[in-house]
Length: 328
Image 1 (cartoon, rainbow, N blue to C red):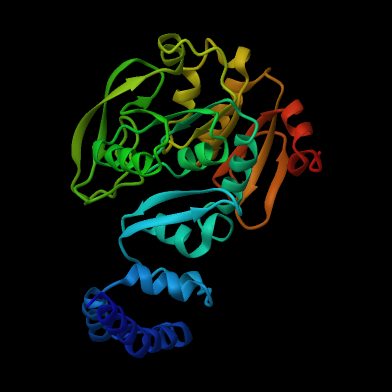
Image 2: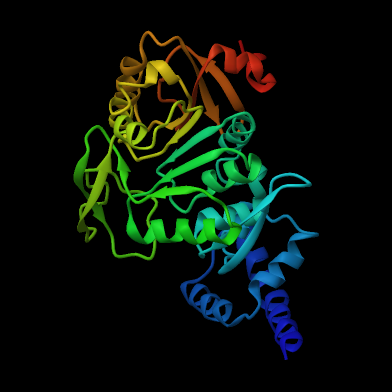
């Protein structure tokens, strides 16, 4: 029965979906009727994961094509020939990019490459704004001996993070908290969708007409986290908290000069970049802009350009890693 359903799904995909995608790729247009019909047909296709896994072995579609080829199910993400991790494909863009493009051709490919290299020699790793856990999972799969801590304040996203960790039997410590500059509670402006990639502390980032749900969350500073967990060093941190990055660093004030971790950080604009530059002044950090297309470039300070992600690290870390020391 399963074999016949697979053949049925494959037949629909090859004879209907593929010609329509080829037509769309060539002419960049589909009628409203055709779009609705395709969506309905697409929902009927069984075994999409199996079909696409087979297809992927001999076809590498462009992003403009594979963004339409989504599904739900568990996927395996290869890191190299000997390492991989599993994660749930919830039908969203991030997982779809990773399924079709892997870690080297899709979503945040350069940032992930930098993270992977730094994880190899890091003992204590923090993923702040973990979402469903791609960076946490990559860290633990790359360096199983590392202690990895993941912070995610949105309850339904946090549940997905825990599901992904459980899939791999990883001992990643999770906290359903937002890292900030004060311990206590705060408000996020959430939406009613199945998932969210963009909420921040005490700011409404949604369009003015979007219905939002004010949700109380728990906040913690890194100063308090370090004391409560008897942390003696931190080697690597990822901070992706939708404009709240300066507050995260403010809450690290008692230990940042002592630990001086490498930091992979998202910066949306020059105002945020300026605050981060001021907070890190005098710590002798090096700064690198991460362009997801062209790679890394050393800069004197964080200035918003064509990219959102930046690497901040000590000179000895840059000298230790060949992909960095060639840049200065």
